[in-house]
Image 1: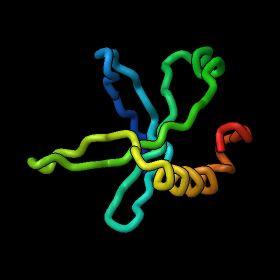
Image 2 (image 1 turned 135 degrees about the vertical axis):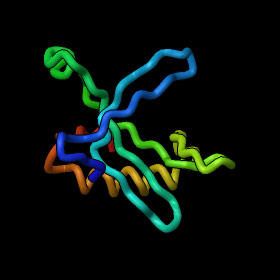
Image 3 (image 1 turned 120 degrees about the horizontal axis):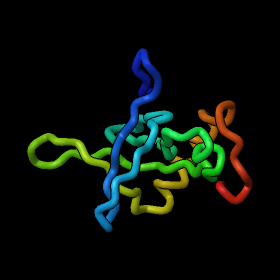
Length: 102
């Protein structure tokens, strides 16, 4: 798990509309030469946390020409399904997944 001594890492991601969203890194996975991150929305307000649907966001970690890492949605459905199944198995004790999430 991507965890510091103070808790899970928090990432700020910018969507296509330029809005910033904070996510908590709940797990990372290396498969072959590929690396993936499982994220959930992070809120400062405990009430917002309770109201959130807790959707697990899975992104692929890529590198640009300068060696800088960035996150991207997984484009291939088969690759996404395989990675999602691994994360869901690893995180089933921490999260309550609904059937529709699978």
